[in-house]
Image (cartoon, rainbow over all chains, first blue to last red; front, side, top):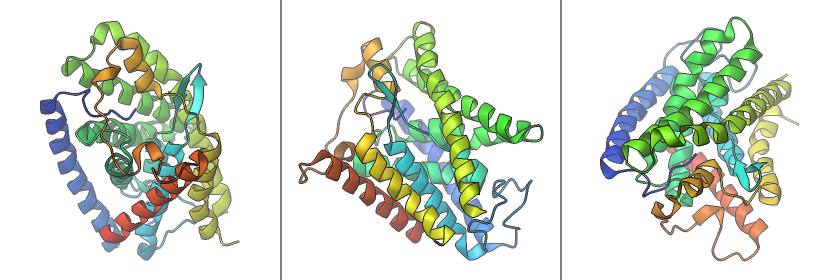
Length: 222
Length: 83
């Protein structure tokens, strides 16, 4: 899912980088506000801090520790490429997991920070395409997907995670395809089926791993 | 064991397992680019830890593991700085 340099046009890359930089700054301000004001750290319906209700770094002073740990979980999970088809591998995006634990604003920040480290130090995703990668995986895959989760969470937590994960991966792949189409690299209509089919398996894998990670975190915190 | 320590150790364990069992096959976007024939447009830039490998360590497992640990340390430093 990490777009390398050279796939996208410079104009589109610059535009997305500018847009995601503004979003990053806004989310950073929100995170500072959460960490410094008297908002409750644990709440079922607090859209600022996610829905993590188990005992896990829930003191104000531990808020940034919580973000660090979740960023490390996502970084390490994204290193683990799992073979999904013949000669194709996939890894977790972790957007839904992150935003459920820390909320949409911090979720965007955590996924963005992981993508920044991967791009700058490990050449995993291009530096020029960083804006596009943040848009696809942090904004669509984490921030927006959180609201999909919240929309269904009242009915069933597990179903909500499953649907949010499907939405997260498939919509990130969809927007990736749109960006490639705008850059004149692929034809949208002819490549749509290929792109979605490849990512459908990953979406299912993302849902299973997200549920497993949430269960694991809950189990350790009990 | 303290649950915070377990939670902090988990990513290191995943890095260890990733070093041992991570697939070498291309990911979906790479596979998609090969299928659509635009994979050669990708511009690789050479960085110190390219593709989670350290150039001065010949062993693939050690190289992958060490670069993963460096990544975790970099994230820790980043969040310390933000805080």
